[in-house]
Length: 349
Image (cartoon, rainbow, N blue to C red; front, side):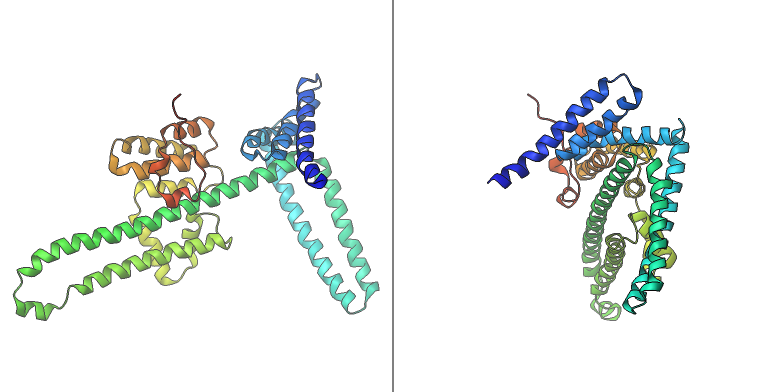
């Protein structure tokens, strides 16, 4: 019982400590200490599990960190930081190589030959720490890492939601084609003389064509999903490009046909969630499209999906609020709701 109580209370104590430190920092006259306030507040919220509320503070920490690292120029600081990360990755690969070589030598009992490699690897690690990490502004690495994790999570979820939408569209298209053909054929078939029917064969072959076309489209969606699941692509857009460049001939054909026939709304959604940082121009176009379609009951599913995706994926607080106010959660397809967390307008009091 004591252990359970301690494990429950310690996070509260830690969060309270960060909260107090954040308040003291915000009211301090020293600008350097003031800049620590968003970092401490983000730690408080993260300790409480309020990740969504912590993100704006982490954005401030990252922005301030880039400015400091770039001598007042945020863009310069970002570029310097990202180049530094690439250098760190290259050094990490070198350390890994040395460790593998040392491990093989140790297995062979050649300790004297393994020792210099271990020493060299340790030297590289120390140099990376001193050259890069020790020179970073407070909290920049944490903020960048956590924001990147959140962006990847949202990107993955949003793309999976749109993949579900694509599957639904394919199945709906098949049903429409079958219904249209059945209605047209049933009238025409009855007027054809029996002898001609025997020559031209059964209309079942048309259904086979429709099913084959549907299967090809679903195979494309499955391959896109596999690429995202395996980490080969971060988005539908990237997966489609990979398939067109390197896929099998049937999949290449399907990808090209999809690109040519894809409607503007679906194409816009795929483009929108194809970037880790959403394109606000595409975002505005999607919101305008949703507003245009919202007057038609038949489009409630697609408009709710657009508003849900924007509310979930947008970095613009005003657009998130607008999407939430117009979102009809109950009209959003279940297969989309399963992938993203959304919230409709608050009920009137």
